[in-house]
Image 1 (cartoon, rainbow, N blue to C red):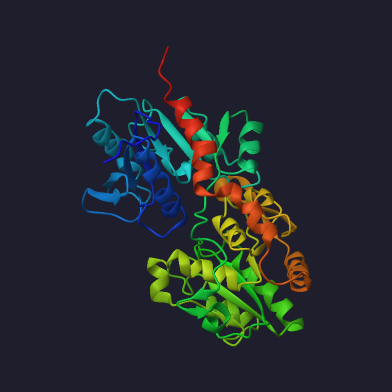
Image 2 (cartoon, one colour; image 1 turned 90 degrees about the vertical axis):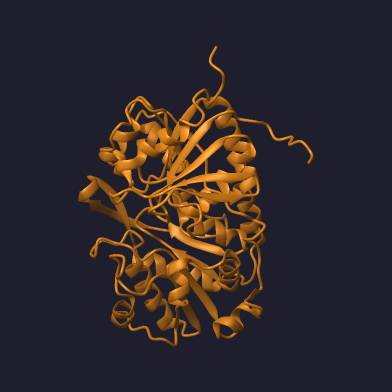
Length: 402
């Protein structure tokens, strides 16, 4: 076997997040990050808060095995955060180490035994103003902050928190113009005309039963108003239709907006629960004329760059992370402040009228693959992000002490 030529980072890191085997936003980012950490010699563990319970396991990758620790008894597994990291690093007692979080950090404020651990937090910042519970964690002297978006970096710097910027990534070998889905042309698979106008929404239907951060009701209502003027339009909703996860009951919402099965397309719900293959999603993005994702706030919003990588324009809110994460030929909508009392901070509620206007602009724009979006998305290619952001960070963080 040829000797590896990859630069080595001699360190131990436990990444607390969803399981890297899960088809969630955090899981997908972990599936790209952790194998590359292994590739460069790091001893890596995945501390799962979703995706594994009841046993300590291993995940095979092309570069070795990732130690896979199960969720704890508390909802966000903060009860086992330090315990599992200490268990993992005990196998390599002479190596520098760090506990890394890839999740909302406010959930860890009461975690036991974390004050003396070196911690790296790759943090989503999805409010217009910094929530005090988030600032409390990031201001700890043992926490190094990494913002996921340019907006997040600006927000942390304005709060006096020193931080790095490392964006989420996309595998452009998969997310690329993909004309077929399961062997059929995309429009044929979705059973719509080739010249119809297809709007897609990709987002989790999760809420606290009343406040929905994805603003799914506002997006659907805006589409319904647009659809009245453009009956040749369709809405693909890649989301859970039930309120099983505290979200909204989509059939009731569609009825309230005057939409029926003829104009709305939903994916297979059983497959949705475990996640669709990336190739399927690439086909959906490619078949779509625009991705609709004007939410109340985002820490990153990966579907924006996945769609762009497939040559599809996007509609998003002109606040939080998305303000910097749409392609130059896409559309940002306006909104107004919305108070989130639970976090003592502000979101933005997207303007329904502004979404409708953006949909009209998208309808009038040239159809087909956007080369502008594809070119713009290249900065988020996974190996580019690893080379330009992660490797400089690891070199600096684990630099030998002088």
